[in-house]
Length: 101
Image (cartoon, rainbow, N blue to C red):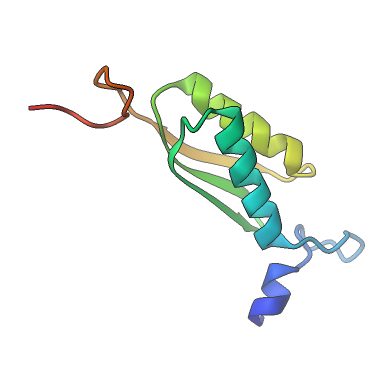
């Protein structure tokens, strides 16, 4: 499949489904997650393939992880959300996963 057809492929491989610009959708989800979590997800990556919408990154609470998933669900059109965001312990300065020695 060439690059153009991948970017506008049928999202769920249903021939009757409307064509979706996957790159634009991923960027919209990424912007929305950043806004809804107040930038709480570090190294946020949104990937879309026929299996669903994958969220990847790190945050310091399960609440933040849930906010990210809820934001993606609103834009995902019923697609599966695979939330791979890692919840890392914070060292108190607000940066997850960093430790002072």
